[in-house]
Length: 380
Image (cartoon, rainbow, N blue to C red):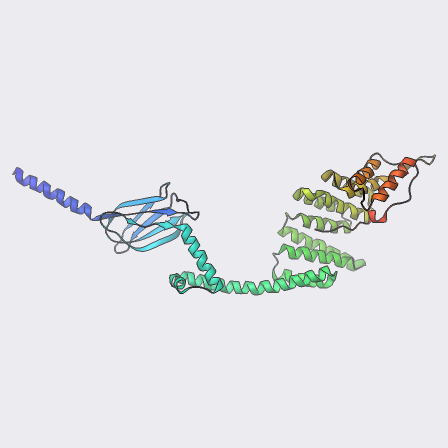
């Protein structure tokens, strides 16, 4: 009896060993787009011959291992952040060592990019064409159609833009307005188009009078607003918008825009304030101009022309005593001396020397360089 039990036990262990021997395993590693081991990638193992689904995640080394799989035919899918990124079909497991299935997402990305470039250039190899899925072919065909439409649109846009630039540079403002307006109709999301359209309207306003001038200027201000909606961090747009506002005698709004430009682009803050000051002088707003030139100096202490213009604004406030003595406000002499220190041979040097001489003699000089008050500003 004992002998029969022993044989039964041997038979049991033999059968158990046979059962265990019928299982298999799949293992591998996953590398991310950066070529480094990818942790927590989900590996989904789906049996193809009969129903069976298994899952395992990669460890910190990007490795995974799943044992106890029945011998069979499988699909192995790599999922990252909830998206299937790669798969291998027809993985047939075996007894003994694990069947290895690796995923290299960096190589996969490079391969897809190469396929995309080849398809776009029309140089798709026969091997690449065979490797494409039906979904990839459909996607590439759609992209090709969209690309062709975009190229056609871009050519029309570029032609209109270039026509506008040529006209604007030649100061042919109405043709420039027409060309940039056409470009804006083609693509309303191009901030540079709106900015140049605004410049064209402002230029057009200088060739008009009365109601036509006001209408062109108003259109320019409106168009600058559209450019800034699309590109609010462009200091040059705020600067040019401020100059246009000053032309419309909206000086408070102009100073606010110049302040924004200075905040966005501190290294050029002095130039922005100087531009506004020059326009204020041209508009006969001498007191506000003096304050703006002072702000230009605060932003850039080495801005020579700002020192000179600030001195001129102070001279305009000089007092004459009953006995005929000429007394300028404090800081006037220092402003002209600073200009001469920074630009001893500058365009305003002789004028600055004349101003200083008048203060030394106490006699008001009648010499004021007209270019100082009407210096043309340059837009970025």
